Image (cartoon, rainbow, N blue to C red; front, side, top):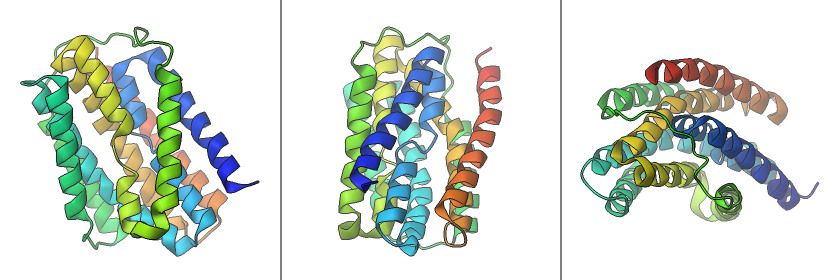
Length: 256
């Protein structure tokens, strides 16, 4: 099958399914789902089949490093939302994400130490996250164009990043795959509908979901150069889903 056709089929399927699940179970679960590698995973997969495996393996390290940028974004957005409107909050948190990403371009660290550091930073992010007091609401108030818009934006992002990967290299490609497209959208909607605590609700779910993100890239990084893509991605997906299932139990306890 042509790679472009595969991208146009696989990316909307993944993003659409996750968005429907988030709409069904609420904002915090939406954030939790966004923690899964819904855009970064397909990008790495397409890089592996359109470039060479070492290129994809280097991009895996860059993507895992992007976990630092995501935590910085989540904390910045959550705390800024306490004092500012969604426009200033979004601008400030995206600026923080960009600055951290720029700093991370020169990061050279092997997979296992990087994974340990990412876990530490995720845990620290959960601890530093401001408390929220609002109860969960459903996201059914969003209009009917919400999910098609997410599919369009997400698919376009995947196509864009994979097309410029040969120009910018694997490290920056990996870092860019963690750009908080859906996290930003969900946090904006939540802040507008529920106030700052609504945004914190989403961002706490996202931060908790990043444990699965880290597990996915640990397994993928360990296997991608040693076995087939089907096996490496298969085990990585199983790992992420197992971790995500555990974190969902934690998330439900937080909202009882």
